Amino acid sequence: MNTLTVYRLGQVEYEDGLQLMKLFGETRRQGLCGDVLLLLEHPPVLTLGRAAKRENVVADDARLAEEHIGLFQTDRGGDVTYHGPGQLVGYPIFLLPEHRQDVRRYVRDVEQCMHRTLAEYGLSSSTIPKWPGVWLGGEATHDARKIAAIGVHLARWLTTHGFALNVNTHLEHFQLIVPCGIREAGVTSLQRELGHPVPMAEVEEKVARHFADVFELQRVEAPPPTRTVSVTLLKGEGADTRVLLLRRRPHRGGFWQIVTGRLEPGESPREAAARELFEETGLRADVVDLDYRHAFAVGNTVPPRLVEENAFAARCDGGFEVRLGDEHDAAEWVDVPTALERLPFRGLREGVERALQRGARDVRG
Image 1 (cartoon, rainbow, N blue to C red):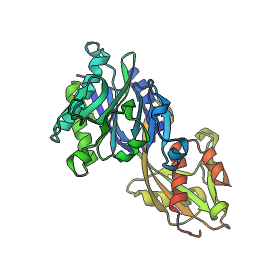
Image 2 (spheres, helix red, strand yellow):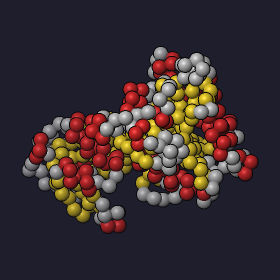
Image 3 (cartoon, one colour):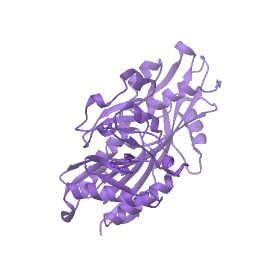
Image 4 (cartoon, rainbow, N blue to C red):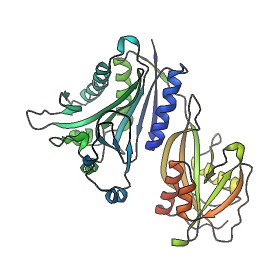
């Protein structure tokens, strides 16, 4: 029996999710792992499938920017859909065996996993032939409402993309689009149907169990990710705000970043952030938790090396002089647009943006 490793990743930036699919797909193709199910949540984002019509995005670019909602073109099937916090997104990375090499059967099997999960909450779901996805109610009774979107991609029987199940989703964001191009019916969530929030970990466990059963796979435990922190160090106010960027030495990649580092055994994320700030800059300061934790893959290695990172921020006065550690060969205070342009990873840019929005206490080193 083939194995299924289920990764519960929490929040993942959409572009990082695409990279994870690519790396796990290559890993699976090379036979370096069994089948994989990535379970995660994305920040607010609209995605356009291969059949998408741009007019099904109702909101203009200004509205999307105001709501901090990204827009991505993808290679999955389907039209436009929304991902956001409170929605369970699943990316099955399966290499389908010969007896399952049928696209329609694969989609039906993914749908069956959704039906079984919803049934555990007392909800009877179905499919509607002319509309993709998983539905409650029906077209004939005029109460059809989509609770899960299905959009898949298969290449030589390797699967990517997958499903999005509305658990505690902010449904108002669906008003920014015509979901999957369907104007005649609405959307719903477990929270709306049951009248209360539903623990995401509980839903993840049910979904994982049903995927193992439906696809006849043996579940194995996923290895824990590497735990890291980032710290955005700011000085100045308003238009004079500056962000400290550190350049990694060439053998470490040679790119610009904010303060980053790993947790040591027994450390809390806050303790690690304060320690890394001192080791990489020489500043002893309190750090402010930005309530941003996300998962991603470091580099392009196969198998991928997964990291879970907590973001923090700190401030220093204008007279502070940076003392570089061993990992970096240059430090530069830059304005915010320059910082966002230089930082190569979405998670680091998000850390800077949150630091500016949240603010950090003025701590003198």
